[in-house]
Amino acid sequence: MNTDNLYQTAELRPFIPAIFELQNRIAGIEKYREPLGFELAESYETEEQLFHDLFSQKAFAFKVSNEREECWDILIETFSQFAARSTDLTFAAKGNSPERLQAISRWLLLLCDWNQTGIVNTTKH
Image (cartoon, rainbow, N blue to C red; front, side, top):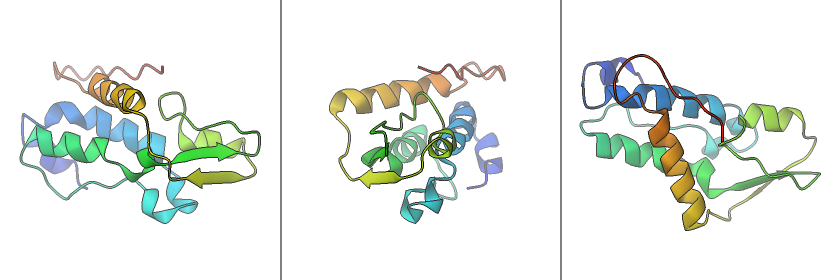
C-alpha cells in the first residue's frame, strides 16, 4: 500500500502512524509464514474500511510460540524481536479471545494521531 493516498484524505490521515507501527510489529513474520505478512488494499475511501483491514491482519489469528513456550505479544514487542530470541517458532491457528481482540482494537486506535499533530503514542502495553 502506498500511504501517499492516505495523506490526501483527511479522514484517513490519523491512521498513518498506526499503519507504520503495525507494519513494524508484523515485519519479518512472512519469512516464516508468507500469508501472515502485513497487507492492506491499495486505497481506501472510509476510515471504517481502513480500520477493518488493519484489525483483520492474518497474524492476529495465530498464536506464535517458541521453544520456551513463550508467546509473541504484538502489544509488547515486534515479531522480529521475538523471533531473534527464539530458535524454533510454532504457529497455531487459534484465533484470539474477544478480550484479546478488544485489546488489539484499543491499541490500534491509540496509535492513531486523531489530532494530527505528528506526535504519535507508541506506548507499549
